[in-house]
Amino acid sequence: MAIIGSGISNWLHDVSGNTVNSKPLGYFKSLTSAIIDGTQYGQVILANCSDVTVKNGVFTNVGIQLGFCTNCTLT
Picture (cartoon, rainbow, N blue to C red):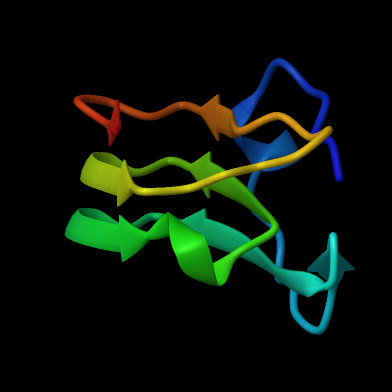
């Protein structure tokens, strides 16, 4: 999945029930101070998040997207 848009309203959606590489799509919006276990997801998208860490993710043939996020880390 890819989100395209230059405004925050383009990034804030309700997304559920989608899979990428046979794993759930991890779409997180307006999340603060969290650690996400990337092994649970086929792709991760962060929208309007702050102080979020995505750990241990292996995302084959897809990108991780961050839009309107501050102080987010991928490890």
